[in-house]
Image (tube, rainbow, N blue to C red; front, side):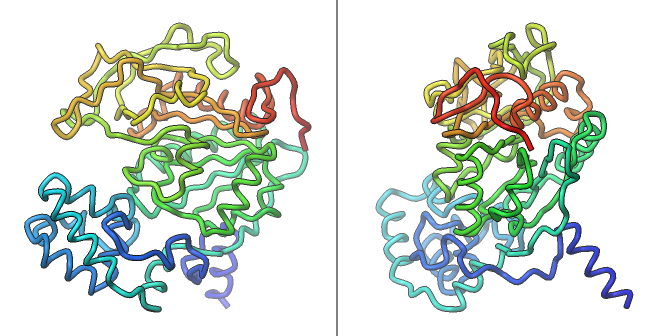
Length: 376
């Protein structure tokens, strides 16, 4: 009886560890290649053997973090090409790719690839009559537990203060049309790795494009490799390039780019904070994002992995209209201490309010409009 109660309680929380893997995982049938998630190569003994035989200097002596096969795994957010290109010639990488592509994808490979996805339903419903917030924190890539936990604690405190109904889950099975229809916004709390099945992707995308809200926090836009183009290019609006490593955490000046925006009210001209500062491949300003905050690169050292990763014009928080949906992303929030910073928390709280349609301009057909959508 006790075991049955425990299982029921876990299902209510939406975090059962006994979830069966999902059969429609996105990369299930893809050929092996140097552009596969490195994790999928480690999960195949035949693919692993090719890596070790053809590029021993790269893969045999790789760190435990890189070779880890148990999720969350850094290998889920990086490819063999990314690891090999610094030590192998282009010809060697091409030869490695041809060898991997010659491997058959077996039923065992498909099961291994799909094991990190789930279809566990979310049985907790938000309280009627309140703004409903779903905090999603399934992580199969890089997971920094202290930052995830600090963010969740801060979000719960905001919900209590604002009267929001908040539900937290780490299960991809929450991403169904029926479940999402109960929520005004979905917050991706430092989510890392490819976490949704094909059906779950479709449900989430439809929810957003038809007027749902999205808030992405830090790691939700910080993977080295993405395997869902819509998420990276349309919802976030750019792809992660890197962060400083000399050192990783630095104090920098954050400038308010749009002091009149609903999300930046009360933040003045900006503030100073110590965090892990992301740089991006494409400036989100060029992808029609509305920039809220920028980094003053003169106040810290934007060098990562021995490379200059400065952007010049360096957005760090912005909004996007994704058809009729509202998307807000802030790249800040790696250090747990940031969730005790009053300015950072004000930004997040006002960003959530905007995403649920309680402040600022609305979105229609990818454009900002001066009206609010209906609220449940």
